[in-house]
Structures are given as C-alpha cells and as structure tokens.
Length: 489
Image (cartoon, helix red, strand yellow):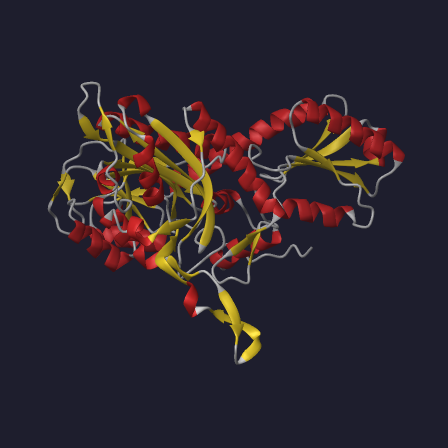
C-alpha cells in the first residue's frame, strides 16, 4: 500500500481524508454525501459501541428499536424540533416504481402509488418515540423509562466529510421519561458524565464539560449539555450532547402519568447521543503524518507480530507462544505470516493503520533471546527478552493509552487562551486558534455578530466556569463569566 499522505501542516483537510481512506476506515459511496464504513473503521465503531453500551446498561438503560420512518404529522407535532431539522429532512412520497412506458429499460415513480401521508426519514427519533411512549406510560409506576437505541439517521447535509458530517450516519440515541423535573435534569447530566468518561478514559481525548447557549441548543430542548474536544488544527469538535427536554415533547404528544396522589401530570424528558463522528475525533486528536494513531482501548488490533524477513518454524513457534500469552491477558494480537510482502511494507502498513504495538521477530534477535518491540505513538523501538514479553507489552499498552491522553491534554492547554478585547480575540483566532475564554454579554445578538465577524461560536459555558464580573469583548456590556469560543467542525 502507498504510505504517502499529505502533511498536516500543508493541508489538514486532505491529510484527514488521506488517513480515513489509506487506513481502511471509510470511503465515499455512490450515494451523494454517504460513506461506506470499511471493516477497519467498523471494527473501531464496534469497540466504541460495545463499551458505551455497557456503560448505558450499567446506568440502568435498556435497548430498543424504533422505525426509520416518521409520519410527517408526528414530526410536526413539536414545532421547535420540526423547524430545527426541516432543512435536513429526506421525505418519502411514493412506495412503488414502474417501467417507463417510453423506455422499457428505465423505472419511474408510479403516480398511483403516492403515500396518503408523507414519511420523514428520521433525522432524530423524538417524534416517533414520544408518540409510542404515550401508550407505554400511564402511572408513576411506569417511570422512569430509560431507553436507548442504536440506529442510523439521515440529515441531508450539503457539505459532507467522512465521519464528521455525512448524509447518513450511525449513532445511538437515548430517550428517557421521568416523573420530576429534577430527575430529568440529573439524567441529562449523568449521561454527559458517561460521555465525558468514555471520551477521556477510552478515546484518550480530553473534553470540556459545559452547557450550550440558547441559540446553540438542540431544537426543542430547554438545556443542552455538551462535551467539547479540541482537534490538532485548533478547531473544536462537539463530541456528545445530552438534552433536558422539559415537558415539550410530553405536551406535544400528550404523554401524561398519574402521580402518587392520583393526579395527572406531563412527564419530563431527556435525549442524548453520540455518533460515528467520534471516529473522526479519534483521528484528529491523535494521528500524525505517518498515518492513524489509535488508543489501545479502542484499537481493533492491539498488537501485530511480524517475522523478519519471513516466517520459518523457529519464528512461528515463538510467535505462537507470544500470541497465546497475550491472548490470555485479553490483548488482541495477530501474527502476519504473509510471505509475499516484505517486512518494510508490513511495518508501513501497520503504522498507517495505527496498530499500537508491533513485535518484530528475527533470527538474529532470537539467537540473543530477544524480540523488537515498537510503539506506534512515539515510534520508539526497544529489544525485550522473549520471556516475559507479554507483561512488558501489557504495561506498554497502558503507557500508550496514558501518553496519548496526556499529549492531547497538553496540546489543549497550549491552545487555550484567555482574552479581554475583541482585537485580542481575532488575533488569537488567526495566529493559533484553539479554545478562547472570553466575556460575552449573554445576548443572542452579540453571539451571532461574533460568529458573523469571525466564524467562531460559543462552544459551551463550562460547568466549572467561575463567577467573574467582566465586560463583553464585543459590546463592553456586563458579563458574569467567561465562556468558551472556538471555530468548530
């Protein structure tokens, strides 16, 4: 395989696309704006899904599945949600094709097969789910209802990029119902914590926890909690959101319950989700000019063993022994016995694919009782005794996981700035980008004007933001705290 990829410093966007394609993660498809997730990319998604699914279940949630299609009347029921997604909706109007009477080799829409009601291909599932919850919830005994679904959604994006923004993508969406406002708020915050823990402990991607400004909230939400990560080009990535929906959807779909005093109330709601965009976050947080870099906890293959220069009985025996001991430790490992490819080609291939650890076994090394161990994150190589190499590799995988997180954390610290004037704000955006902590007067007008002038948005109001009276960088009006700005994906 060709190892050459565009340098990050020359063209970050092309560098990203090169890695996605050459690391075998995804490719463009025949459908505009849609991607094909290749086996290597899907294996990463499966690891993300597996870990998150367990974390959801550990917090009391269960999985279900709801239809891909939403009747237009249901979609319209919650006005803010419908308005927020209207421009991205794909709509089904007919249910049958027929042979073109003028050209028998072509198919055309059958005008007699028009649907009585148009169907929206789900951009999100609140409408169909809350219409269903009306039949499931009658009493306080039915609450809380804690449901998640793993699904695909369609949002007809005009500008697409593999994993980061596609017309169809994979995700999970949680939808919960509660008896009290406080319960629902606690649930929304709990799921933000789950996402933040996953991002930092498994993706090795540090995040800022916060809540969105009113104009950046999810359509139909009263509050949106978010985790925001910083990519290597100084742009922010919204990595996960959790929404307190209040009673908006309950009222729109007439979902009520009888409380313990036998009085009817509307239920309180949340929704929350992450998507295959997380794979884009992984790439942009850790990768380099040699290719993909994956944190060991999410790498489909953690260790690869390469014979030098080719397999033989002696090398095979040592490789099999090392594989057995690694597997006993729960480490995923492969022995590459392909004799048609040279070791140098294999090294480049596994480097491009981001395999965390590579073990090289050669005749000369075996005569000394050692093997070569290379780590992907720093590209350091060491000789290690064959005896006990499994313990060394297990520790090395932990060290790589920690190093990736600390490296990303340092990058974020080095690219987080605090400014007090609009001139400083613009200068930092142009010179180094990253996160900028600045005062804002809490008006939508000012927020929109800053976005119009600089393309920077308020990523969040950090949960740990300290009360600090100051002046808005644009208007000079009073501001109670600094908020987090950045250009973003």
